[in-house]
Image (cartoon, rainbow, N blue to C red; front, side, top):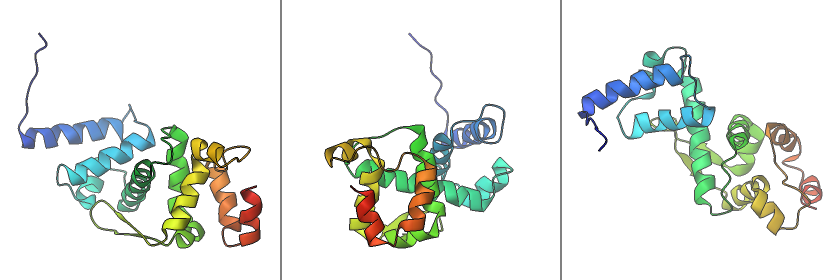
Length: 174
């Protein structure tokens, strides 16, 4: 038998903040992907606002919280896309770079709801599917590409330079 303790909702919220202080702004930092998931769950499951999290966690601006939430939301879309699961830690930095590059956001026609959990409104399924296929090693292999097209954030930054050039994109996919 393993003893367990069940906390009330209010005690759970307090423990959540303690965990956040330890693992987001403290000594035992989680990987960025886990920090983003923590922020997302704090908002959606425990009712915190972005502002409350920013004030409580100290050192985490609302802008940084929004960027993490947008990245997490895009990663969730990728996972639901059924294109090939890819839990590499590098994927977080890839999606974070996508979120921060206006050229790519515009090409994808992504709109972010700034309030709450920064959910995404996607207005271009074709381009989003294409981006996801470039990130997924499985999809790249299935399409016959020599290698995964987007392996890291540097590749995303290069993509931002050519994203509106149809000829360059065709070459990219050969």
